[in-house]
Image (cartoon, rainbow, N blue to C red; front, side, top):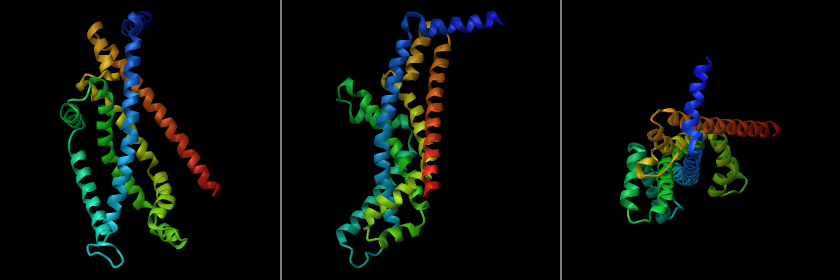
Amino acid sequence: MMKFLYGIWDAFYYSFLEADRWKFYLVGLKNTLFMAGVACVIGVAIGMVLAILKVSIQASPAVRPRGTSFLGWWLIRLGGWFANLYTTVIRGTPVLVQLLILYFGVFKTAPKEYALLVAGLSFGINSGAYVCEIIRAGIQSVEKGQTEAGRSLGLNSRQTMRLVVLPQAIKNILPTLFNEFITLLKETSVAGYIALTDLTRAGDVVRSRVWNITPLIISGLIYLILVILLTKLQGVLERRLGASDRRL
């Protein structure tokens, strides 16, 4: 037993502590969290806009109703068609392919210092398509009577969506939204394909120096800890939202 424990400590020491290799993991962790944070903000922003467009086109009749301007009606329909096209293309292609196209194609002339931002943008664009469908489902899960109640109080359609429908939709989709954020965090592991030192690549580089899989196991454990923390945060938010509903 002692020999087994010594072997584990020996592998950990050479993979994490010797030559300050822990600093390499720290750089990878910082880059991973930065990419995931940027992608999260971009994904929520894109998803929110696209979800509202998709809901609007579903509520928009095929024939322009009276009192609606021709330009406004067509803008809604074009926006909805674009949202459908966006989600179809983005969800139908791998995130790695999108990252490579964005980095080596769209931003091929950008300085190397911007690679981290380009990666965050790419993951955000990908996440936006999935967040769109999550938010759309959340909006449609809110009872139609809530919208009618908001309009009866004198709110216009935008105010009703922002003040009445969206807050209830967010509560309904919170678990699914956190699952998307967890998936997004793990998807950043492909950033090494554009020579970025993310958490996975950091472990792989150390593995090439110590010639064992312990560095990859360490990277996996760090991912696991991050996921557990996000899950705990999700539980705290759900309990607080549940407590506020009970007070009402």
